[in-house]
Length: 293
Ligand SMILES: O=P(O)(O)O[C@@H]1C[C@H](O)[C@@H](CO)O1
Ligand SMILES: Nc1nc2[nH]cnc2c(=O)[nH]1
Image (cartoon, rainbow, N blue to C red; front, side, top):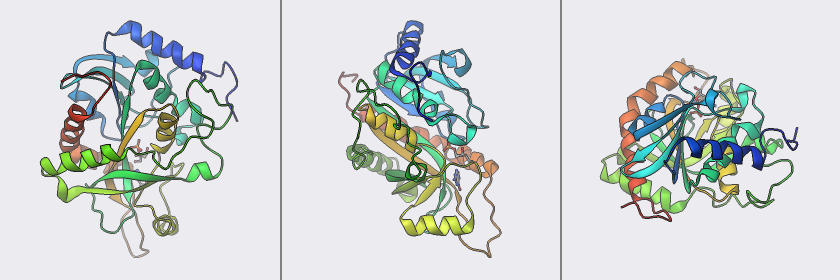
């Protein structure tokens, strides 16, 4: 279950991949962006792009899900050097959890300081509507309750400590920045803040499961992000994450609604432009160790 040395996920493997990427481009990213299902258009915001197919990057997994293009895009966003994953990996694709999160460690070794993650999620909070954008303030890691945590196994201190704190996983300044920027852009009507719960997928939830998750304090449910957040925090990157509420979780036996991936992708397309505006405006205002003004 745990990665052995030479498993392909260790420090040396991540370093080899990061070093290889750094020989292929002069861009030295300080922001890393992860595109959720149907949100790959975020990568199109980058200027002066250098694009790698995942299949050409040593050690990198392959995207297998529709709506996840499988490209790593380097470029600049309003002058800030960025790297963007156009396609992420999920537990249900069959990858070991350490492989799903490997890109976070590669981000770190590329010099990334801030990670911005996006996902598509089902809304559990009855005040949420399809198309709302939920700024994630906290998470519930259901697979983690069963021991499925990306940090399980030997700890490599070069990345971080054995027992990282998660009560500050989601950077509060960045949450506030998102709210401020969202307000300036006129997005207040569809901006929310809430708790994201990750499940393993790929099946969507039953009605009883949705009711249970809601009672436990989750506002939205999905199949990603949390493993990446844990790994990113472990190695000391700042984290911002948001969910696009692509569908309403079915909570009622009378409902005719059925969760489906088509609706997820369709909602992504409808909100794409506003999400691009929000993320790009935030990127220009995040402070980094170097000044790009
Ligand atoms: O990568 P994300 O979390 O955005 O993808 C969600 C979860 C499933 O992969 C898919 C279901 O439609 O969207
Ligand atoms: N688990 C889960 N993931 C999603 N991704 C987008 N919508 C949903 C949903 O309703 N449930």
